[in-house]
Length: 527
Ligand SMILES: *[C@@H]1O[C@H](CO)[C@@H](O)[C@H](O)[C@H]1NC(C)=O
Image (cartoon, rainbow, N blue to C red):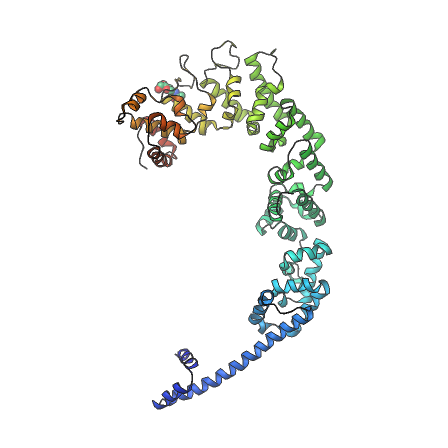
């Protein structure tokens, strides 16, 4: 009620309203108005006084720093002063200015005040000075001024003042230099406490080594990559800068990797000794791919391979070499770079990271059955392609999952009679066998939608040419062909109609139990 009067009385002001109220004989209202006007006078007076105070503080700051007023630069500080004038004394502002000018030149001090005016509320002695000393230890004096220009909030870092508790240099380093969150820092602390006993100067020089070496990255991109490496492989950061540099050199010059991708994807390689680990492994790999450029391409696509244990790698190569020997005879003239192992290393590098016993061997034994190759020591005169030949044709089949991709696809081909298997997945002697490429075709993206679309159209085509073509069935090479266009063109199908069908059918296939039903009944199922 009272407020409404104020609003009413301040704006359509004074005499008219006053006389109006008087005429109506509202004495009380008249008295209130007079009182309010007096109050208004007082507030106005106070406002000019506070404006005066803000202006005074502002002038003080500008004079001390020898700066001119500039709306775009100083408005933040002015607004801050307006908001906080009650809590700020001239003495307080003067102390902070003294502190700033003791350590920074006038331009830098101005920058800090423009960006972080909150600093004016800090106690120079108990908070700012210790923080400054602390940051100076952390960065060194010259670097600190660079760091402050980049992030003027730095002086407001918490935890460094007298009442902030223990000073943890490494924590502040991780937060400020690598932008890690408190939670991430806590994780490193738990998993790798040694890092927190490492001199910050050491950590800083390692980070600077990476930064200068990552030429193609912006400062921010490099920070993200280095931070990720810190989270995944903190142990690298306590190695001597010389050995890190030495190893980067080796990986770049001898293995053809580049620093960007080492830091981003293969930081753990920097933890491996050159003489005992990297060099012998590189020698082993070069035996299978003597061409340095080709080897570099393989290593770039999957640098993890250099991190595998030497004997694990050797065991995998020996296994592939045995498949070669079984197919071509032990006395064959096959050289290492002509071998199955070499082919896999070059064309399907990540396969070498898979477990030999748990993954590679079961997969290859399954494929051998499906391909109709009875055992590894099949006769070289067998009419079917040998295991080595099948795998060479399409080594990437080994990177697919046996249970998730290969087996369901083989089951589809068996149900739809493209191949004939017995109940234990062995190819019947009279059946044709499928190439690795066919077995790798996507079940939910290619095979199932095409097969079902074809069968739904089988008896409904008007066009007699197309009808005749369809009577002969859906040929394998059309079923697996790389594009939907080839499939549609073959039978004169409407490409849009097919793509609508496909879009609706694929989500239903996500439920694997419906896979089976769909194959069996030939009808899409409602979810
Ligand atoms: C393949 O299909 C045949 C004939 O339908 C069937 O008897 C056999 O069990 C199937 N094999 C597998 C592994 O599903």
